[in-house]
Length: 227
Image (cartoon, rainbow, N blue to C red; front, side, top):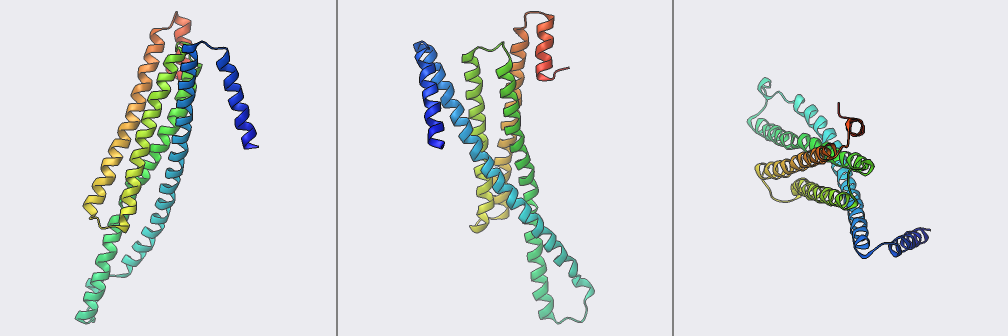
């Protein structure tokens, strides 16, 4: 069934290309390649976001367990323990605090997971609106899609770095190094989102500049939800 669907798509593309000129064919092929690339990137992003969400949930549950354990120990209130017992439980208490501190990184990771989801959601909405906007030529839409593809790929790379920081718990890495890795990747992800918003604003401004009259301007503002 899947192979029949792919064959049908290929035949449709071939039919369309047969009616287009050389330049138009090249533009069409480039656009289709970008679309396929974007779909693959978004699929990869969705899988990585799901991994991060699962890890975050697990660590939230672990944090609850650790906090319950910590609440059991009030070492300063226990006077009849031997020195050996005090040292043993003091070390355990210290290790629990270290783990609790490590898990605290995941609030940052949780926030970044939400940010990545916003990037994909915003891309899908904006791309749909730009396709409805009659002020952009096919070549310009292809460029817009190409820029989106670059931003999405960059955000995917930053997700990889965040996952590396998580998996680094299996490797030798200090808390400071791990936090630095998460923050650097997180800052770049924040920049990806800001770049996406700024790029959209530039395109909307261009569309408004191309408006023919007041009614056309109003239509564009309504399309993008501008007051």
